[in-house]
Length: 203
Image (cartoon, rainbow, N blue to C red):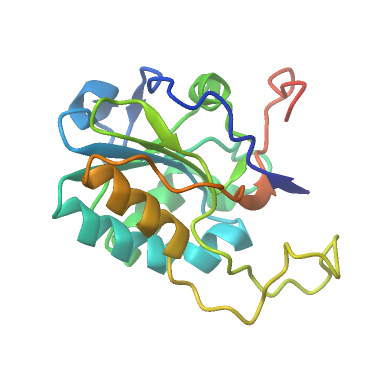
């Protein structure tokens, strides 16, 4: 099911987490708060919206990481719905794509709930003071789905290349100590695959 990011709580701080990465090591929020900014990206393996932008996200993380932006990706999906989202498959994808950032598994889904994540991909960009500055789309490109549920809307812009334009503009501002550009267009993606009893009223 298609969802749009909620874009809530601008100016808020990132929520603490302690999650295992693809090597089995526990990674905590404090490891990622010492730079000029932080991007927390909720993604997963199977989602066509994530797959569409993933190479661009990996390139963005590599380039902006050299400029002081920390990046961490979190998969909140229940693998019972899609086996491709299992920790083993996460590790395979991270190696295949050359992730320069940790890819964490939110097994309990409590972290996704704390952030208010609703779709994959869902992006939370924090400035150097660890205040939420951007919560929008990576760029305006969308995947070519065979049966889009909202045909004819602006959500499906299949012919546009993946550039990361919106995220790059926001990151440039954050790294320069400036406010992120406005307005912010919400990200569009697959709904998070919640476990029974975890699905929030806004999910």
